[in-house]
Length: 568
Image (cartoon, rainbow, N blue to C red; front, top):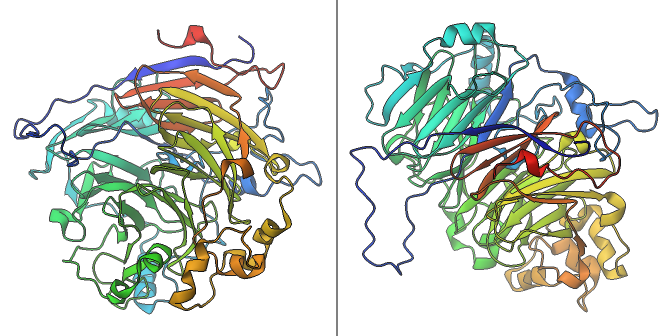
């Protein structure tokens, strides 16, 4: 049907039974608030094995002056004459919200540049750049108690040799299993490889976009036990990091490869710590190198990174490369800006922190309307961030203006994943999607003109260059950072000091209705991804659904999913 999303594929992953050695969870007090072992719904890391194209960068450098078209159509309306897809690394997941976009950019600074200890290691790495290094352990023959069983496809080499390099690979987690899938195959229900772990549940994963090739992929997996696996699926090699909680003993909520790096990735642990690891370095028992942050007051703790190990440390022979305490509560989501300069971090305490991780400083801190924030992503041009949370809202934030610009109301329960659709974004118009515990998929359209409505004069200072930059102040003055911009104080004075931004009342914030709201599953949804020709969703029970985009459009509001295409 014209203008509708049609269900193309429906794939149900099998939930593995508990390992025989895993004792059942016993809770003698049903009213106890003790957290059960961490688990997560099915999330996907997508990748296309194809040469990297520099033209992908036009996703956030659209030249509208001369009318040239890039990888994004010049309209958020569904278009029938789309350009050819240039590749995908939508990884998880992914909270990054940059599906189809290659983060790598030669202008992105390399993490740790300026540190001779890391520069020496990078110089050694560059000598072996032509030869992709693999982990040393064989996961199929592993005698580790961490790995229970590995089931590769009996014709795996043949399937890899015959597949189209432009086809879509996916890594998916469900319970204690991780599955490697070929979503472009007619037999996609047959795993390329299925790995069962003994007790650990995989919660997150990511594929390195700059090292992938026809015979190599670097995949990193984070687990409920705090362990991290570096996995090369084509050779079935693996290595285990943070073994026995050498660096951090809490579950891994998110993992992301750092831009322009073959070795470094960032992991968010659920105790509120963010750690940078090198996939090839050995672990060493970690002891904080800097404890000065323990003297900070509560406000300063929120607005400053507590640096336990700086990236500028001279001790870089073992992991971690860097270690920061970000929050005293669980980190739920992590996302890198498209230019690779900022981290957006959301946590259970309802905070959104924007971190310049190269300088190891917090740039902005925002608070939800109420409840924890669950997920975060960036727009393809890096101008906006979208978050979803326990307030059932999708919120849109402006990086440049350092403010909340809109709330999106339409979900009936917690929002679990948000993602921008890069094929429906240009320099002024944006398409955003979200899924939640209410089993629904919602799509939202907004434009720059909709978000930047006239504000009182006292608020306009937010657009100044210095509005998000902290200036030195005494502790006694720190309380002014919580004052709203319409206070009796000079707006310029307040905004220059403001890092912690007050909650904006609903009356002062634009409210956006969804252009689509549809129940697409029987179970709570956990992940959302956009590809050029489809939208993919997954739920907490391992159900992965692929929805074909509309082939034609008659109006801008008729792109509802076909009820005949969804499972009943």
